[in-house]
Length: 74
Image (cartoon, rainbow, N blue to C red; front, side, top):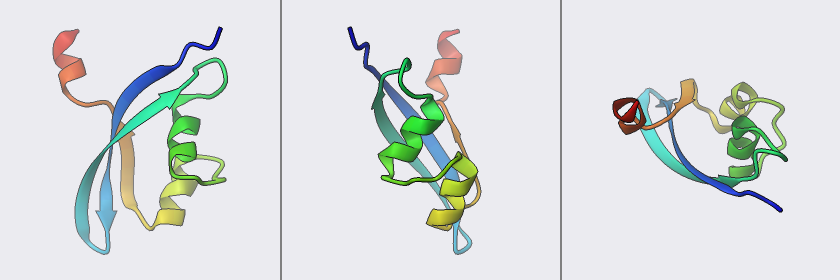
C-alpha cells in the first residue's frame, strides 16, 4: 500500500538580489523518493540534487527547511 505524505517545506534564497521565501506543499511516498527528490519533482526538473535545481532556477544562497512551527511542537 502506498503511504503518501503531505509535507510543507520552505525554500529560501535570492533571485537577482531579492530575497524570497516560498512555501511548497509536497505530496510524496517516502518509499519511492526522498524529500529532496520530491522537491525536484515538484519543479518538474531532472536535476540530480537540490543544489543543481537551485542553479537551474537561478536561486542564490538557497536552501530548504521545514516551517518553524515544527520546531515549536518538539
